[in-house]
Amino acid sequence: MSKTFVLVHGSCHAGWTWRPVAEHLRDQGHRVYMPTLPGLGTHDERADVHLSDMVDYLVDYVVERDLTDIVLVAHSWGGFPLSGASVRLASRISRLVYWSAFVPHTGETLIGLCPPAFGEMFRASAAASSDNSVLFTYEVFCAAFLQDASEETQRILYPLLERHPFNTLNESLDLDEWERLQLPSTYVLSKDDLALPPGELWWAPRFPDRLHGAPLIYTPGSHEAMFTQPGPLANAFIQAADA
Image (cartoon, one colour):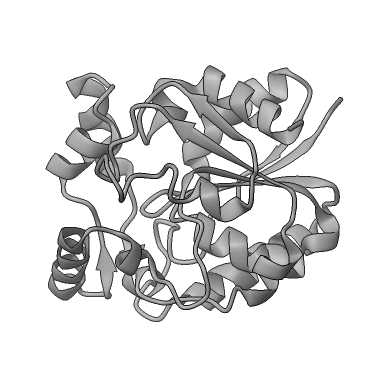
């Protein structure tokens, strides 16, 4: 049965990063939308972009296209705008899918949910920028995000990343209503994801446990499996949508 997927990218990414996955989903008859959130377009202003802007944009994107019965998928930081928008889009959502994603609670920031060294890296990157934006270092990207790709692939992809508005990593949302609604959800996790360190700060069971018994589906690959394992990842999303 054909489904409608709305794919929400992670930090320093944009809608185009979903293209390999979208191709597999469309080949199986599904509709796919890949918005680029504010501040992540190549020529976007970033200094005054806030997390609330991301939520508003995602809500408007879905409503303006009159999308219904959607599978709303988030990657990594994308769990923040997805959670915030899902409250206002609840009647249009068939399922939320968090893929190697943060599942925030009220008052939590991405920096607060990461190891302290990450916060230091982001603050230093923002301070050194001209527009209050951040970017992972090449070394971190290769070792922790895309370690399952060749050096050639790493060198091709890294320059394509966008600088990310710092405010959206250091702000929180009121998610009490999201918690109350308990919308149908599934957590998908890449088995070799090292973007968060293995142990108590790793993705699972920390974030899947916040979805109140939602299914947990494992898929091969790293944090950037949309590039290295797009077929299995697309299949995991389809499985998640049917959970």
